[in-house]
Image 1: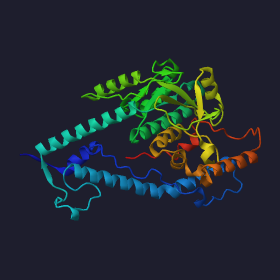
Image 2: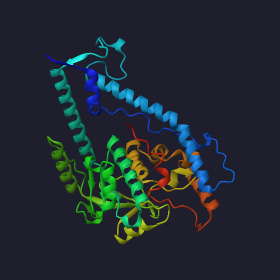
Image 3: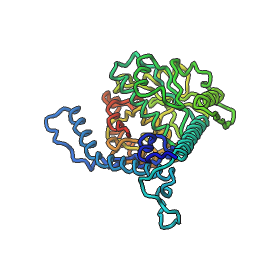
Image 4: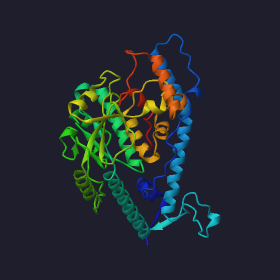
Length: 396
């Protein structure tokens, strides 16, 4: 029987290992901004000082990020060896088990290799099916991209990068949401295809606006939540089953806007939360709220000021807004989600504030700001280009 060296197989199929996702800490660099020594910024403009400060932040967290990446690679290698039967489950001490580990490298037969590939394929298929089924039975997140006329090429590239991050966050989350892109124009679609849009699974991309989609409505959903199943033998069959489930699962549209009077408390599985996909740097203040009002949609704001004292702008990226919703569901409360998601440079020295203490700090901040401050950045839920540098590291 012919045999192959295991190392060859590892290089060929390293991307397909049983979909064992070992998550290391994604909060790299969650140290306080106060730990970073302020750069020598004498005589520099405000923008230049900001750039220097961000450079210092990246430099201070670079080593930790590399360490975390190595740990993730090591964990995945352990998972691969376990899948091949070459070692115990990751983290298990061999002294507590009678199974004898086989040292690498060794050769495996053609039949063993075929069986390994078959089991990997089955595990990948089941992982995809589970991801789609969980998404179909969750709340929905709609990224409203119907603003192409307001963006230049650089802004569209920035927005597509934020959407790329958002898809990855949702794909890796243990409780993913149904994710939609609506109002996608030809220029943005071209940028997204460069990011790999055509291979993204479980993402509904539409050129029409969300208001034109039959599964979305303005009124609250009175019907009880129904569990939908996603089935299929092939990837195409899974996608088709997923889309059928979404079309049957009607949801109320709720637009996230800092200008809203209502604060979002609990996440409703019968709702589709809309995030404005705008790169504006406060150039288009209030435009998403005006659109929601003209469409007679319910609007809510994230409880950022209720729990968090920010040291700088309240502008959040698309991926930060999406991650806040996902982490709120996973962690169960807003303070924990905010503390995990908001970039460290935005958090004041007091960090997350809870309850009456938060209200006291908020009142003091409002008194200090005064009324009608024209330069005060809004708590806009659209993209800010300055944040994408912090989230831009990709794993190999």
